[in-house]
Length: 320
Image (cartoon, rainbow, N blue to C red; front, side, top):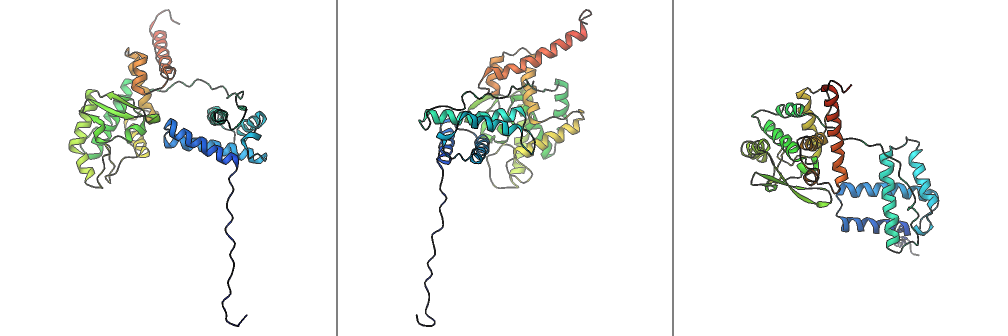
């Protein structure tokens, strides 16, 4: 070869990552639930995390094919969740993660990928019944009054809190509202889990608070940012996030000096509990909350029964 001649260097192609049959099966399943069930982004992310943890356990047992998984592997996965070096998961977390695995195996059987559902006999841990925590009508009134005022943020906060209490909306549902979702000022269109839409009426207090916000505050907040259809805006004119809405609630609750911590879900729990205590039918409350099962709504009837029992015990001369 002549001196100074250029040398052609042969560069080997980059190695391609081979996806295992289990990788492909899980991705197929996740695509299926995304399309067929219309899962929310957060729910899909939780499924993906749960199955990634399951896959890590299977990899430690040299399993990369769904057909090689046995019932003993599923059991080993549950045991690993309860004996993690960084701390055992709660029963509710174990139940949720096992549910993701059970759903995966049921899907694989339905699709003919495997010949048996090896997770069919796996049992989730028994969960203690956790009753929803509501605050009293008087305590709720104090929180709402803590958002009184004529400045921009007070008008916005009062509208947000009144809407949460009037509709039982989840905080994500409220944050995702657009101006057009307020229908003639009399009701609001909420988009719940699984992209299910429901129309919930607004009481007079919520209507007044939202009207005041739309007329006196939102135009000024909107001028601070780019155009957005969002109903609730932050100080820079953008849509209020779930995290910001949570901070608004915490700030107003601290101002109300309740002596207890409340969360966005406190408004939802109080909405349902106060409706049932006032005589509303549980099926109606189910529709308003957007629960797919009436059994979930019936938990609130237990709270109401406890309240009645406490009042009876305190008031009746022969109750104690």
